Amino acid sequence: MTYRILIVDDSAFFRRQIKSIINQHPELEVVGEAAQGKEAIALSLKLKPDVITMDYEMPLMDGISAVKEIMQKSPTAILMFSSLTHSGAKVTLDALDAGALDFLPKGYENVSNPDSKLRVQLIEKILAVAKNYRRARPVGSSSAAKKPKPVSGTKPFINYGKTKPDLILLGTSTGGPVALQTILTELPASFPVPILMIQHMPGAFTGAFAERLNAKCKISIKEASDGDMIKPGQALLAPGGQQMMLSAKNKIRILAGDERLNYKPSVDITFGSAAKYYSSNLLAAVLTGMGSDGKEGARMLKDRGAHIWAQEGRTCVIDGMPSAIVRANLAENIVPLDEIAKRLVEICK
Image (cartoon, rainbow, N blue to C red; front, side):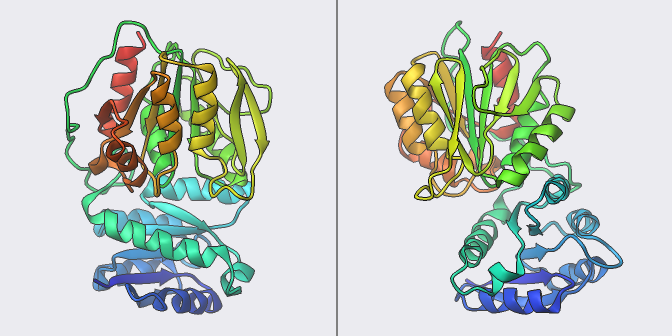
């Protein structure tokens, strides 16, 4: 099967470079190009592409406005190109709220370099969203796209006891910003259990994302810093480009991201460090995302008696990470996204 791609960018040079990269892959074909948002909307309706790559800064209509209208008229998998700056992070988060699925760093030198990681990331992300989008939309997206009906997990929910967990861990990647926002905005101000969040995201983005969550949520949320203490009713977000670990019960260590690791931050790293200081009274949930980061850390936690949840696959943008947990028989509960907050409140009373 060949997946059809629409490229939207006001730079003819960037469109040519992206088109060349995409058309080299046997499963991908660029079927159209647009230089601004209004043209992108018209072509999305005419061509019905499987994936759209979208720039933000364009004449006549910006990328976010185009995303909103496309998601209203003809919901499509959209990948945003973003500058790796604090302001670029805010724009990208707005685009994700509008219905875009994921983002890629934009740099002309990166896209023109044949050895650039961006080239590999571009193909990986296009293929992932193309293969998953038609059967999955993120529950809780603020776009006007039609949301899927709630689905049940593949087995009855297990309420594992009367004692609430001492700590909750949430690990996620593609689709994670919307998933985390969906969960955290539903938690009451009195929510008593501390939360650690690991979201695959660049360093320039996590601070802006934590600020956005804190403004929208009733509980306190901040980007984690070295030496932070884990507190009830507070959620800490792992800083991008680094690793978040526990150095002792209730204390956070932030370490430089090891270049040998694919993910910075890594769900496996944080889960594994938590396994050293917490045992049975811990809950870890693996949410939407590409790959299998979190599986080995979840195995370590499970061996210590911790409770492991996976987001139900049909409510994921990409169900790679949750399905890896399920296939490894690590998931005690498989929970649809729009039920996770309710279940957390129930077990944390």
